[in-house]
Length: 60
Image (cartoon, rainbow, N blue to C red; front, top):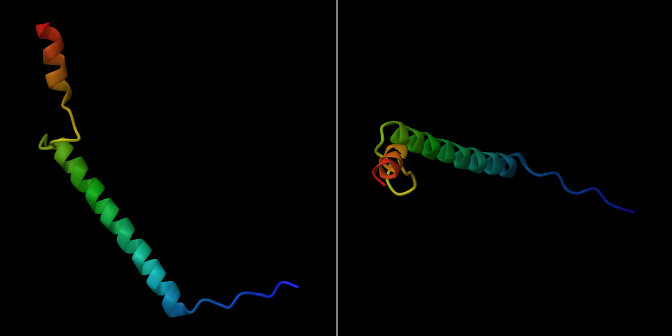
């Protein structure tokens, strides 16, 4: 017969939840920062402004 597993303690459960929430908060903060940098047009490296691409097409 299958035996039931032991119950996870509240402290272990709260530590895991805190770690998960910390990671989620960090990702949300990074996403907001990237969004702000794109809106202010200060983004470099991962973002290619469309205005430059349009100018290149017009010059050819």
